[in-house]
Length: 303
Image (cartoon, rainbow, N blue to C red):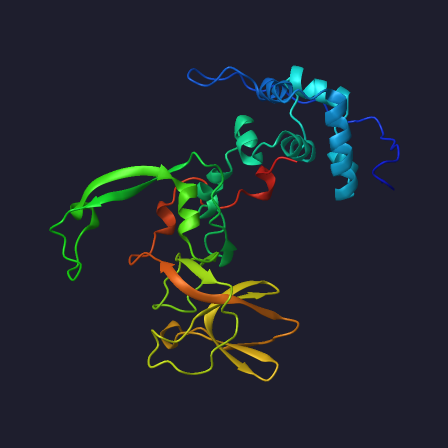
């Protein structure tokens, strides 16, 4: 470990396992390898390898982990031998060069946004917290650009038929339109606690600033606040009531789920109030999800 930033530090020679060569780019993809790209960025910044080494030494010292250190020899491998760096060293290089980490990951064939495509395919029955972060400024979303002037807001209509023009914008632009940061949750297919008010498979928007459980003030079940709660063994989404030091989770009466009680200081934490929901009115068929809908058997996992 490091004592002072301005003192000489000794590093053990790297013993990273040899990396497999990167797959050759398919037709239409840029032929510049990630290593060549990083080298071009370094040369454009007019930084020598020793400067990168010194900068990475500072990062390693402040992070308290010498895996962040990038030696000139290792940098040469990364730039010229198509050797894939560890995420520690990739973090350091992106920090030193002023690059976006997720953009560089994409050059190595890892698209962080693709995790969304797999979230509902694995452990779909488990209620859990999820993320709505958007990685990369180039990912596009389709949004209505112009609404038909004959559209009447009072009536229920198909959006597709009233949008006069659709257009694509970078998804990251939508983040700035959100007045506060929310967290997001997924209601597992086996979680019927709030059924039929919230159907299994719903995606939930959670306001983390509304953690205090409201005890009264609603007129019906639709106005009663629903909370997203983290427990020792997972997550729950339910109406809540505080009784002394106990948090009582109250299910919807139609669900036939039991009322549960947990210690607020050691067993449960209210993450926030559910303020938005996207849900299917027709439950998804477990049999129609296709291959990959369940986790592979233990014997099928590479070791």
